[in-house]
Length: 108
Image (cartoon, rainbow, N blue to C red; front, side):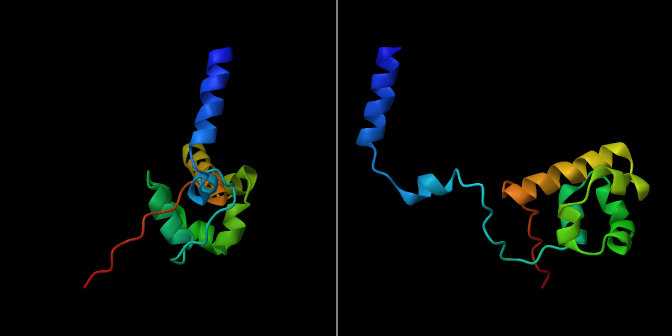
């Protein structure tokens, strides 16, 4: 135990402190360069969730409202359990800044 503490303590002393290492553990999300809407978000999740784009856009309307929507509201919209869980899981990850939908390449 003492050796372990000594090893980790000396590593922190020997390694220079960088701001990139600290940013890695931040819970604040960085601003996303591309605008993310409900259709892009649901297409990024996949697994058939994108079939509910029309329902969610008409009832919830705004992407920011989708990020704080609870499961009961999604249930009232008629979204199946598996897809509700996926939506809620990825909205939580998005709020923490751990996941972003992939940006689609522009067709030329």
